[in-house]
Length: 357
Image (cartoon, rainbow, N blue to C red; front, side):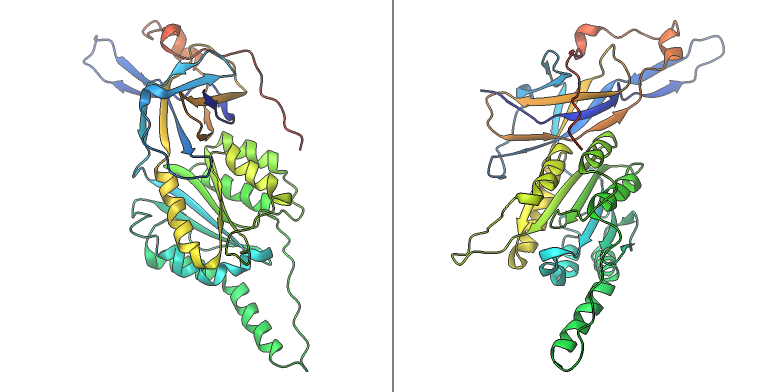
């Protein structure tokens, strides 16, 4: 049995970089084009656990439900540089996780997040704030960044606690954010879109949006087209028996949006937040980088990408990518070597469906 991943999007047609090698006068210039597309692919068991290493020969890709094409090369992401944006959403029960956020996140460096990674830290409270922006990862920068974006929330908690100790005093009112989750994540995605490395968002949030102008599906499309994978960490209460209890409900859109961009939602309580955040970094670095040649023909627009692994029942979640179409001038150049269609995937005829907003 073969399991097919959820669709990711390819906007345009190909990723194509080029170099020109200068020669002496009168000698033709050799143009070399890199015609490979790379897609990060998350592979976990149905219980979101690690899977055994998977051989390259088991990976195949399909564009617009076209014929399955074997991947040219597959490797683990490993220590590829990551551009990471962290969102700390203090609304809802996620406030239970925030007192530990600075200590736990700073503890990810340098063992799990490395100096060649870059990080931006955002807070979603009464307003959206940012501290670090694309800064080198380090324990101190992470700690200061988290502390800074949570400053208003932390001060308010101290004030509320002091008021509770004096019943005769009026309890200060909490604030209501004017920026909501989907809009915040859209802004973060836009900021990440031109950053190098593997682009990832970590949202510590309940996943419940309070009324954004942007729909979750618009956010999903934008994140796919810019190659941003969104991961979530959501607080869940513990039952009397100690097991985690999660009722999807309003969080369905958050979970779907994360998985459709190549991420996943992890569940956490304060006592295991450290373990879950370390697990998040391990999941990111254990993604597979799947390579395949660019197709010989195609049109601009949104295309679906599917990835399957032979003889697998695992959960497969590819990220999206946006790539430019072929340059007509380059293709018309007599020195351009035409692509052999038999060595690249073929587009199918199935079009991407619009998910209701």
